[in-house]
Length: 112
Image (cartoon, helix red, strand yellow):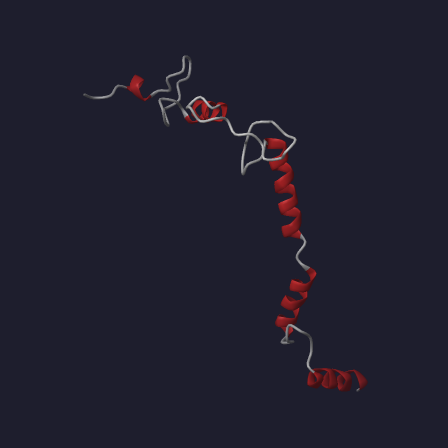
């Protein structure tokens, strides 16, 4: 049996997009999945006092946006100690600070 073009279209009336899964296009499939139409209970946000529907990573959309904002903030401001270790490695200084020999040489250079 060959499939016709109509067999490949979303099962919902008026939608002309191609099917993804369970007879629905990606938009209608995701909408139905989040609504729990496939026998799976609709997940809720993992924040205790929030009862909105799950959007991503266990959070509803507003809490997920907040989570991403915090994640970006942490990535943009590096750990000062790690940053100092990185800078020291660029100039050849050990991670725990300059050695006594290095300090002596720097003092001599500053004095001259």
